[in-house]
Image (cartoon, rainbow, N blue to C red):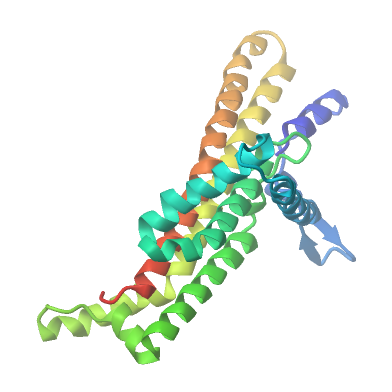
Amino acid sequence: MSLSLLLAASDSGAGFTAPSVQESFFFDQIGNGKFIASIKVMLLLVLGVVLIIGFFAASAKRAAVVPGKLQFVGESLYGFVRNGVAIEILGKQGKKWAGFLATLFVFVLVMNLWELIPVAQVPVTSHFAIPVFLAVMVWFIYNVVGIRKHGFFGYLKLMCYIPGIPVAMHLLLIPIEFLSNIILRPFTMAVRLFANMFAGHMLVGVAAAGAIFLFEQGGISYGTSILPFAASIFLVFFELLICGLQAYVFTLLAAIYLESSLADSH
């Protein structure tokens, strides 16, 4: 829930009412109310994409040997992913995938950071459809790349067959490896990103709601309202760390899965 909306509700004189989950994530009913979507999140998604494109276009417009501020930031973001993720995980092949991984990192980072921007104050990635789309895209890419390199059956063998173990163990391990490497990877990627951003957003909202509720009670509650207010401030800075960390982890996993599909052995 946006702290600004909580404050507005408090100032209206109507008394404090705890926000519902639907209100906290800005779901809007469309038409007769049977279809519920988040118009605000979709607008933030589009705006975020426009800002990312605009930023990198501006940073590359006047490229120079001695970079300006925009060029420096753009090159630093790309260089961080290129050297710290792509080349570190994929080796020489990492240069080929650096652009994709850097784009993925910046996109997830910006969608996460909407949580901390005044007025917006909701992470786009807290809506499950967005992490699912990203995870399925990564899943599709690394499977296609693996099949192109090894062939369909060669790729299945690479993903599911562990050499050097007793034959009887394959009856147990091949289904487990297939389920883990082929089926569950996009689900676990999506849930990890969604759950962290959803939980963080709710924690900040609950702390802010608690502060306003106690403040409205008056008396000794004025003093006790300082505790949840301080907690909400702390959680905002903590969420800033989480936003960057989750973008990095998602990108790192994408690189690891690409490397596993391109490897010559399990």
